[in-house]
Length: 207
Image (cartoon, rainbow, N blue to C red; front, side, top):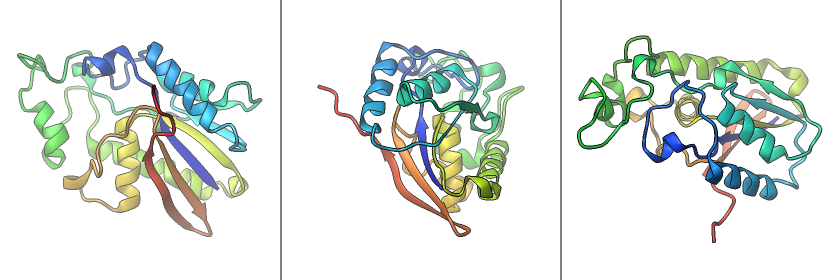
């Protein structure tokens, strides 16, 4: 099994660093364009299956990459972005930072080991549990062993999946950083072994 794990295209909330989490924000025009460009670069990949976070920015990215291929897209809740609970919609940075907790941004991105979830939100430990569950699903799907899968998701859940595969402790949760919009990480599942073949690769060049 070969998994092409892809972050969704850009949204307007990405541009202003507004906390999206599980808020269902659509792609903007730039996000649509880069998803299409990514699809053009992946035309030769013979995908046999497609998975997506149920959120529209990821699902639309999956549709655009697949273009007109007759592959049904299966919604996978474990690929949803982390929930920021009551903080969704606040801007993460700015003058002043408008998030009620002034330590939020620094803890989340620079000290994830001490990050505390907002009210009604999801902790990074909870997110990693979802990441493990998703990986275990793939390992146990023996009937998918020969599939080439496109999966569209979100920045923080992709980092959680990579943290699990690299066996990072929470201090190093972010690894190489948040994946770029429409970047590709390829992961191979073979004979009980999981191998990251490429990480956070952007396939297109903007002129």
